[in-house]
Image (cartoon, rainbow, N blue to C red; front, side, top):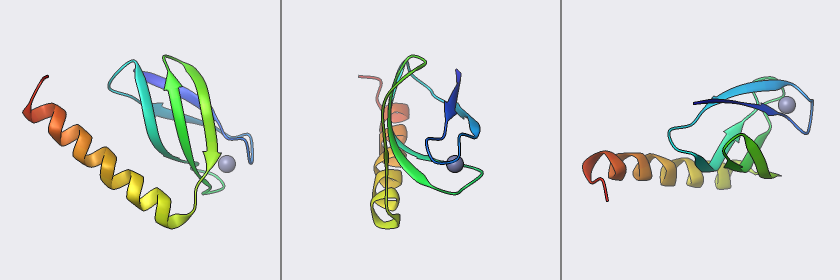
Length: 75
Ligand SMILES: [Zn+2]
């Protein structure tokens, strides 16, 4: 599913693809390069807060692990 996220910093609209109905994790604006932590419920953006480099990196690792885990084990 593709959702559109409007960047709070520069108001650029970014397309973001999610696997499930809900998503929480990192998002990076293609335009201003600001990084955010977002929580999506369907197409509703519940949370959107700026992240620093270290936190973004950490969340990306978590996200990778989650996706890998989901592929290996559909629990
Ligand atoms: Zn932006």
